[in-house]
Image (cartoon, rainbow, N blue to C red):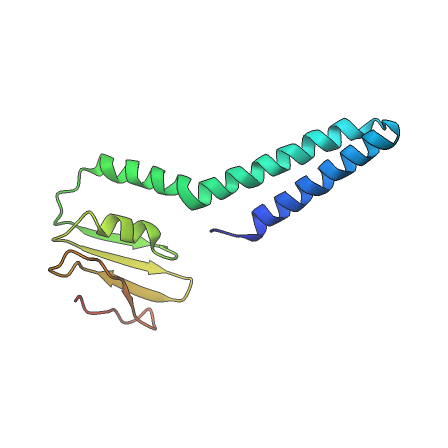
Length: 136
């Protein structure tokens, strides 16, 4: 999950505001209570949407975008700023005869993927950005 602190913070704010809204509404019907409930619920919904978008939603979008490319299967792909390489590996699965290269600043590495004859895909990374791995 990308930035796991974000949904945790949204969830904590949502629970806190919702609890404060319920408590103040039950105690003496204070005017801020409805707003606290509304904002608390919105924070909880935001936490849920964030979790969906980072765990599943972005993969759906990437699949659609890669479908639109109509790859033949023998292309070379370069992904600069690939981070953990999720998009790179998704694209590499679509090019059984091609190669996919990625470079991300997360650990200053260069990754090269090339499917072995068994059609399974692996990512290998070198320890420095100046060298690259040999395809398997």
